[in-house]
Amino acid sequence: MSLKPLPTTPAALFARLHGQGGGDDDLRLLRCEGSMTRALARRFGPVRVERSSEGLVVPRPDEARLLDRRQRGGFWCREIKLLAGGRVRLEGRTLAPPDAVRLQRDLRRLGDRPLMDLLFRHDRLRPDVQRELRRFGRDRRGSLVRVTLFRIRREPLLLLESLCGL
Image (cartoon, rainbow, N blue to C red; front, side, top):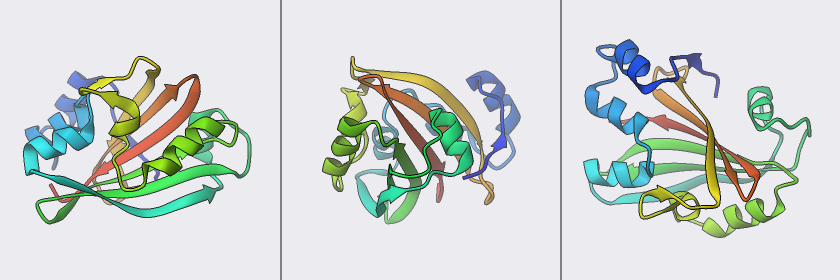
């Protein structure tokens, strides 16, 4: 998912995107600090996770760079869609590197549950989860995108989220 870079601070992001196809409610969703699944549920009602694909992949160059890894393969990738109100509201891609064995196992066990089950407790990050990086942008379709790098028990996890159908 290549991004057109946008400002990384929420205030600068809001100023740049306001009136450019991202309404105030969409920008609030993108900037939410807690679980995106919960934020979507508050706005649209019950949310369902639909896995698009899951398995070992070779990361894209920008993904490997963000994960600070040079390995060519063995990255666990989970791609999902979050549906609410009968429409796809978010497309997500999660990557864990080959040396993050516990994290890859935890991702495989999620099944059709949202990633928030692994990252959050009561809409706050779990104590063993740190958010290291957050970037905002638009994908090729013009959808608002959020890229976040987490560390879970010191293992890196890359999450790419694209808002759609809002």
